[in-house]
Length: 170
Image (cartoon, rainbow, N blue to C red; front, side, top):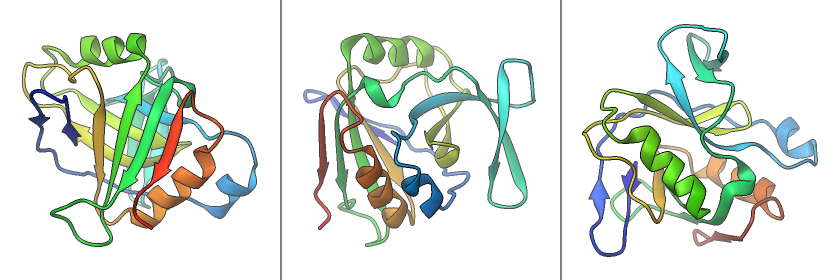
């Protein structure tokens, strides 16, 4: 993930632990998808639910997400400058209150895991590193080999956010 702020970009290196393919059934459902960040726990609890990554891995995400589709004020899909043509970069901006919530949830929580979800599909699952929280003003989510999934997300999210949706990859 890359976290940008106009005056001082902060780049966080994180390994992608899993990517799932977004099904056509999700898009055919016709309702707004649930897109956002949630905290990942190492074990199941009453506050978590299980999600599959691929066929062999299960993660446990908080039932209450840190962000929701309606919190997005701007979302833009780009092909990463230094990535494969199949890689995707999604730039997100949220309402001021949600920006602060993300910052507070990540500040001084090095080692915490966060997942970026499209409905129940895990697009990015990272381990937060460092004492600093997510920079206020926006987040870039890198999805290795995920351009097709990212395009489906962008198509499904139109009309569901509190703001602008742009696909700059076409």
